Image 1 (cartoon, one colour):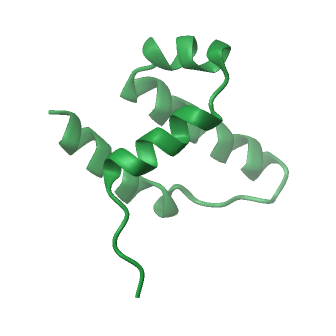
Image 2: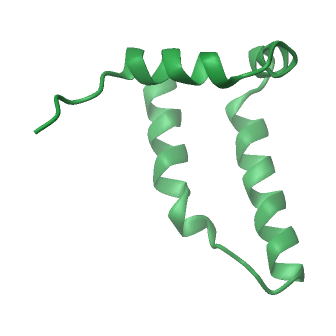
Length: 69
């Protein structure tokens, strides 16, 4: 069985996959921005009748919010 992956390893992998331009954008992105984007995506999908409901991502967003405090 593989050892668990640490959050540091995951963060380092994410940093390697993000462009310098996006890294600058991430620095000023708030959790409120993420919630708004998720709701915008759901609305866009609903309009095209291909909705993936927020129920799938809400637990993750709530966890991030709790972790950030």
